[in-house]
Image 1 (cartoon, protein in one colour):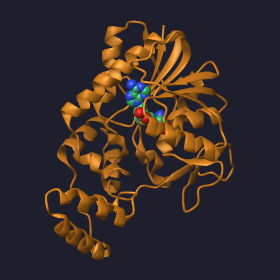
Image 2: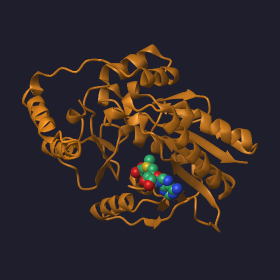
Image 3: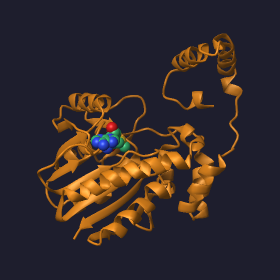
Length: 314
Ligand SMILES: C[S@@+](CC[C@H](N)C(=O)[O-])C[C@H]1O[C@@H](n2cnc3c(N)ncnc32)[C@H](O)[C@@H]1O
């Protein structure tokens, strides 16, 4: 089924699968089966089977029946792709910035989910100075958007591959952002910051429309590992956050371990953390933060699910 949802061309997926199965001497069989599937692709109908673990977790967060029904009805529909403009445009479909990505990417636009856009749009007023440290920044979607709103972003990421994608984006958009290849957990910081964005590494469960395979990978042990990293990065970020500074914690996941529980564990340990309310009718409020509500984007083709929590260090 995943062959139909991937952004890769069919021939590349078939080649990869054939190569991988050669190890088990099943290359010819896999080749024959996949080619037959592709021949019949117009007649294939996807069922509505949803992996129980995925459903259990999603049901826990989205207690509203109408939201759940919308998510499940559209789970196996191809996602809508968006492009976000660096400048306000009256003809945009949302907040003067978001356009549908049909065939052509416009010159000063970059591809980004509408939910991701909403996270930045609805939290940018919390950063009370113009310099922002973006700790897990590559490939730069959020940094670029923040810069387009007038902030000066210092970006950090530990992955050279992701940083290369970030540079590619900057080159195409003719922008400059200072990027440092750093493992945040290993680096010693002398400076303190007023404004930090932490878009932490996660299970990416919230990207189920563009990555349908995540629906089959709700693995508690793996997600606990993500939680451990998220807490470590968050702890260290709080150390370099100035008093009265703001830290915005984001993940593209709705799993409680990576969202509500991370903030619970942090607030239990630190009694100087205040969690702020966000003013967005596109999100639902839960303990410790907010989740993007895809139903609110129904008329524009839905969205990924993100979690965001706004923390102030008192
Ligand atoms: C969710 S992605 C960030 C997406 C990015 N903020 C955007 O909007 O395009 C998480 C990023 O965290 C980076 N990362 C994970 N652990 C890190 C660490 N210890 N130090 C720095 N970067 C890290 C990964 O390389 C990955 O690029």
